[in-house]
Image 1 (cartoon, one colour):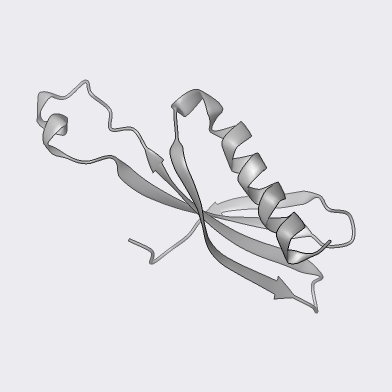
Image 2: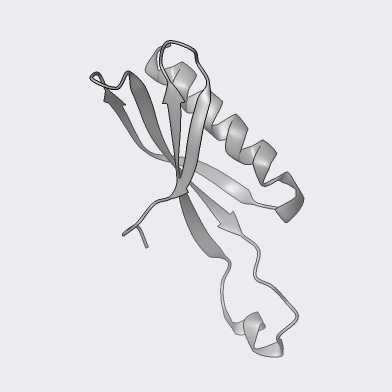
Length: 88
């Protein structure tokens, strides 16, 4: 698997797993290959809609989420998805 394939797989995974939440603006933030573990760590940022059940929420813009997707290089398999700390 090369870097482009890892990025494509990560974006597709995020789009599919959050499909029912109406996320948008998926962007690549970071890519890292860890040769010892033979995994790709791809950070994808995206917009999440604001919950509109609170009248005060109209004043806030959509929030941006950042997820790190870990992908096995040898198997091209998604291993994990976690929140990216410190990116806001």
